[in-house]
Image (cartoon, rainbow over the protein chains, first blue to last red):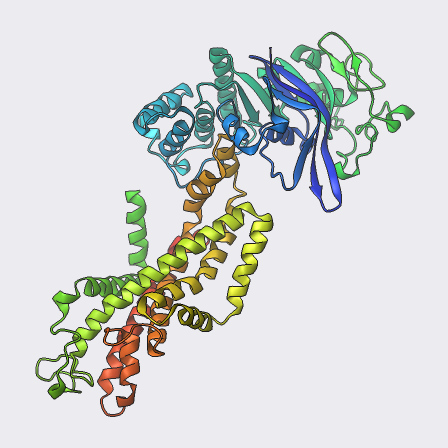
Length: 331
Length: 281
């Protein structure tokens, strides 16, 4: 059963000169209980996609176009702001990449938790406080009762991210959690703890998780399926094994070849590490061509004409490229 | 919360000027609230035989005015009036100004443009002139003077609040709370407001002094408190003819106004130092 079905949406910013698309013709869906990771480098439109699902971007400057943003039976594209308020935090919630600044600095953890609790559950303050303590225990915060009285600045980054996860889990009718680079701002040991926590929570509750990240390590730890984005386009999609073992799009191949762990030979020979040549194109300058064509070493003339059509590699694995080949090229 | 208050008191104590300001303010408030306790005479009881007595004569500590009323008692009751003016007009300006600034800064767009142009128009009038115009429209009385002062103080709160909201609404926690289902009203008045209070409170403390001074000015011009109300500005106005013959009648109410305004200004400056995080460390 599909929890979220994104149908051919284009997200962009409007200004006096018109509409500049940032994410183009994006379609994907997530099944119940599944973990989908969206991978891509900075500026490829991952976070914008995440914000758009909850319609968090200022409608004065941005616009979402397309055939549908189906959450269950509801089309979020046509939902009003007050309908979205009913969905945010109740059915879909989100955790952000900056735990240091994502909590309100003037309220205690307990005040913020009870506030959100009463908003979604209609509990009394006292019940909400107890529920808050339970939630903090669920995200493994030691001495949860004490933590309720603390202010955000008294907690470490990892603890704050746990509190934010607890806040996101408040609603009993939560169906989907969007995690926008939840580990980016944390150091490596804390990253692992947070990922374990997310994994544990999804196993316990059957939560559907949409993970936005640029860290392939995070992808490998947690995902069922992976979607690779480049400059606002989906370029490859498949199961975790498909993407890691059999990357097909030249960009995915380049990404995986750039991992330091795959570069022993080069390092042994004192050659510089592999990197994809060139830079991400400015999203303003993107034409109808394949956005990767300027950096691709297999580029053919068709690539410059139009965005490639879908090529199925297996039942689960698809890529959008004219010149697919098998396996990681020897870089 | 207790630690925060204790820390603030400590910082206040460290900044001697601000502590002095707080002391003066509290003194005036205590004197104002318990005026009947401090006063030695009825402030409006006239005693024609004992006009213009100099200070320290016949039980009149500060002497008497041109109608034989005890100057000290009138100043004590005047503190009550002035402190009330401060509270009322600052409250009017604070509530309306902050609300306008918050809505304008948070919503942006046309709402922001329109409300800020209205504020610009208000600012383009000289402040005293604007106050006088409003009092003239409402009619001269102490209550109307307070309302007029409140209204003409609105722009400064609206501007300060809007500026703070503009930077605060871009903070991550705002989007985080929005993503958890908080609506615009909740975001504006429960999430953002407590975070922008510091600059607004500094403005309010400084505004008390201004309000008291403006009320004295309006009363001096006959547009505020009406006789026989013991109001400092009115006392100065009615006794200015005797400044050469009976200096005390005009001097002491003037000194009272001076101390009260200096107290609020010094305290406001100190509050700015304490509340402005950029000045710390």
